[in-house]
Length: 302
Image 1 (cartoon, rainbow, N blue to C red):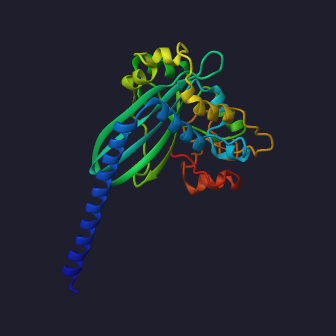
Image 2: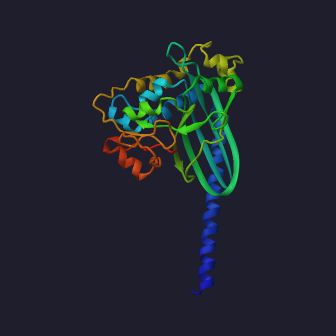
Image 3: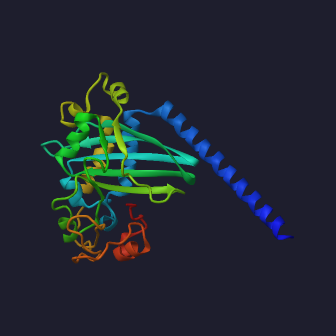
């Protein structure tokens, strides 16, 4: 076979693979759109959020899971949580759409009624594939909660800075949450798009979805300040968060991963990192640093 024939054969295979990717991506986008039209509701979003949170928070039955989870101390200090999923798919052009809920900490320590949120967008670039990402954004300040509650939207990395949040246990976590950035972000991705970033993502209040569930238009500020009782439909989500806040870490090794740039940055062993850059989240280094006790749960993407 001549060089030209080999080149033609390779080009033909590449074209076939690209077409297959495009068809798969288009089908996934259509399927997600159909699901959104047919089944988007606040109870289903709360149910989905509970499942997402189970993958990010420590399991009380397995305290060692705290080594690779959103820290108990971060949860206990949180003023609010945004939990959502984003589907991204495309061939050259890409589209993404997401949905979830926001809840806020009330003065008595309980969690508010949820407000539905959505996000979306389009992009252009040399990208082929599909991706499902799960996100948990921890609001570390009242300002972050009010920014969403009053405006009905929140731009991550906009007026409020965001950073990849720490994971693990011990004194390194306490240092990281001393004067933290307004937002800590955690994510896990499944698919071909690597390094999904939340920078510039806008979370928008789903007013119609809230109205459908609560029976009348209720602004996010009223939902997130306790003027509406927490609904039974969100009970599973509350239970997951409250259980993680009560995990007994006695006997769990003090090991933490604090991403570069987070105040109080330390190394994975809990010592002061100084000018040493942190591990890349999701890398073999960070997984090794956390040790075998981290189990099979993945390190979160930054």
